[in-house]
Length: 109
Length: 115
Image 1 (cartoon, rainbow over the protein chains, first blue to last red):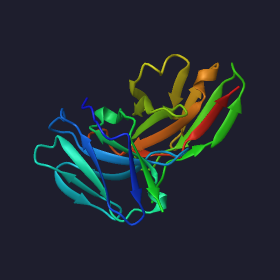
Image 2 (cartoon, each protein chain N blue to C red):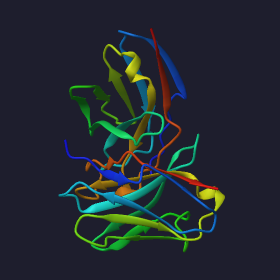
Image 3 (cartoon, rainbow over the protein chains, first blue to last red):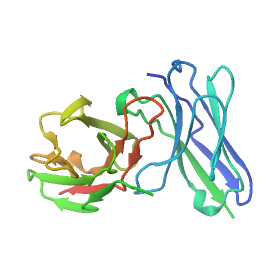
Image 4 (cartoon, chains in turn blue, orange):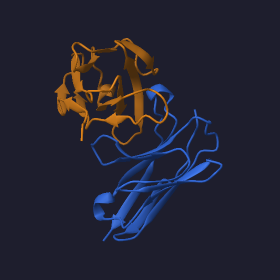
């Protein structure tokens, strides 16, 4: 199962773009890359998922280089409510998602 | 947007008692899961369930735990003889399929406090 590495914490200010990079050197050919957001005392919330190149939805973009050994979650113009923990996950092994410690994003006014 | 719902949101129980946590997965989903998160720690996989049987379970999911789909909509996690260390947030999740690329959706969790 591919292991992911992401920064433990990041700080940002309202209105800025935030990019969180995750490395997954051992990603398998069939693995997708999925990002979740978690607020305190709430369940992980799906943000975005991709396989290669770029994926964009109404809340974020996901950039995946050709070698797929890393990915970058981009949050445009963050607000205070984006303060949360962000998890990068690779593959799902039939639902057995392996969560790391995630990146704790703190957005300041 | 369809969502996974869980009850109760919070339960306090005495050590040694049995607890049942309930979940209603998204209606067209076929795979169901339980995860838990001890306060301040990572989200941990407990068990996956498909076609009325366990597909995979972690080492955490020992004989103290059991899962059941008693009817067409509910999915339950039973914890027998609870221990203090069972205190955690328990998340139910579901997905349409089990392969990478199929999104797993989580409920808001049931917070279990064992005293």
